[in-house]
Image (cartoon, rainbow, N blue to C red; front, side, top):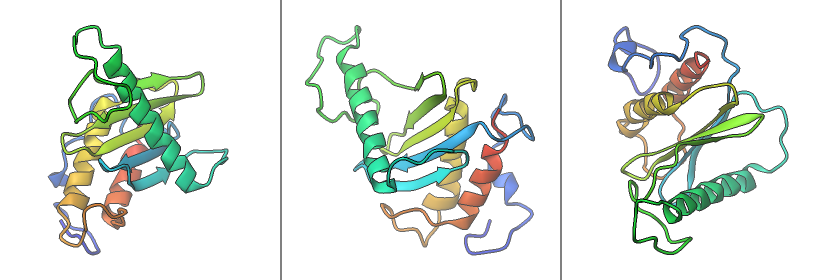
Length: 177
């Protein structure tokens, strides 16, 4: 693998195979947007592939998305029927704490969410007809680890500017069905 430029023949062998059911080589217009946030709410990456209407400036959009996720996680933990201690609404939860929230669907899109133990939050907005995207989010996280976290030039907490990551991400997203 190279972090700087060019490619090697072993580059694709370092990554796991694409998850089953993601339709390798299929039509790729089902993924609309991807957000990656760190635990402090800083948007490390925003990528869009199919967003016909832009109504907000990017900063406001990132704040609204992070606020939505914060509220949904807090709400799902609060109404969790299996936990006696409910805590207070709005109090930050540690990764893995409380009830897990994976996705929600509207008539036009599906929001898919994954939070890692380190607090990295991945949000993939897809077409409403797509199925469960947890495996796809795990694969995207593996791309993140391989091309961003292991990159000696990357400074944690700064926006992601890694061409190999975005190239492989775009290539993978085109396979989502």
